[in-house]
Length: 284
Ligand code: PAF
Image (tube, rainbow, N blue to C red; front, side, top):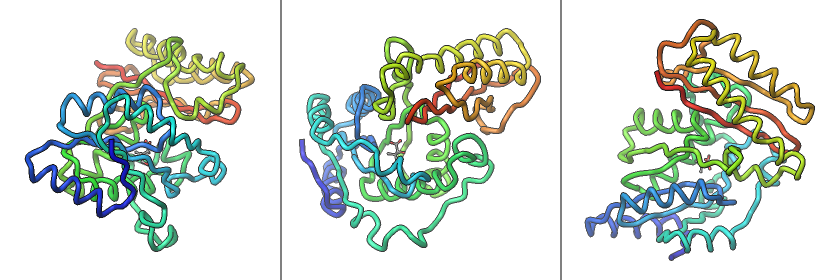
């Protein structure tokens, strides 16, 4: 497995592969890899000749300085996991090469109504930073296919719009969320939970599953949403931020009535030092 930091070297490496008729899959990450990331590497390996994984903690997508500064850096472990998974290349650019003119006065993205809700509402500027770094990464790596996790569903919708609106020639795919045996969605941020918090964290997925059943049974969205929010808030260790039902295609909020299209139930809650997000899709 090669480790490349230089942008031009990465780009020429991929150009050569593609000139040789090889199909290139790409998994962008911020490191602190878990089995969820490895499942994306596996999906890429199954569908491509070469798999490239980037590890880059992108400063422009953090609206909270402390979150950025304390983001785990576990490169040696990550490298071993990627090696074992059969990844071909790790791309680890420096901040200086990604943002040679610094991060002030950068181009900014406005994804319209897609980002006025959920993560976009609670993390101002976050999706513009994601748009910038993903555009950069796709321009540098030029993969045939890029893989993202369903846990960050709104991020996937944003990236899908980005590649469509900018005619970026990469196919983007969303892969299922991987969960711990007790249902907690795998996330690098789970590392921040202490033992007590880790033990109660699966409540989020239980609440999502109950809400899903209630919607399928035809209950009113507003009532389901309130019950789910209250169930989380009832536990003093949690501070729920939002739990919303959104139309799966438009990502617009649904506030009441029975569902008659496929929806996603999305939530975010603070637990100790971690801010956790999760979602389930309800297909109709
Ligand atoms: O999902 C992530 O890990 C990041 O948001 C991404 C897509 C690698 C961009 O920094």
